[in-house]
Length: 123
Image 1 (cartoon, rainbow, N blue to C red):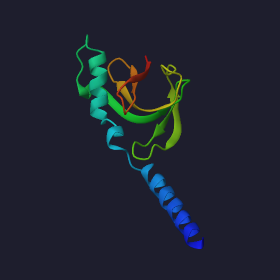
Image 2 (cartoon, rainbow, N blue to C red; image 1 turned 45 degrees about the vertical axis):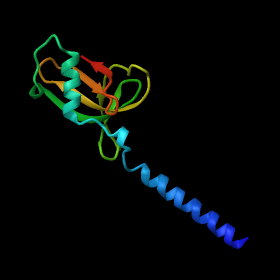
Image 3 (cartoon, rainbow, N blue to C red; image 1 turned 90 degrees about the vertical axis):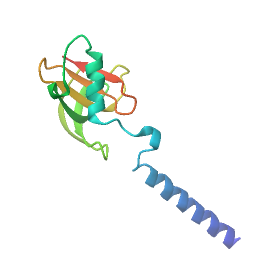
């Protein structure tokens, strides 16, 4: 009985460590898109105008459903200081996103880093 209890506790600890460790590393099908891809998505969205990647600035942020966005870190998904407010997200949900700012017209796009969907636009 003591042996069974020890095996059960050991297995529980190993599973816990495996799950805790998996939260720190992205799964192969959930690797975030690079910032250059986010710029390409925005350029494609604005296909009627002629923009180059140099016309955009990119930053990684956390966007709340109400449109408030905060600085963030793409490697740790930490949430930092308040940066501003945009339009509410398309679903009302919270997202980590690439904030792609157009230097020419001042518009800002928030691109979800896993699927590449534009979740909010601010002009």
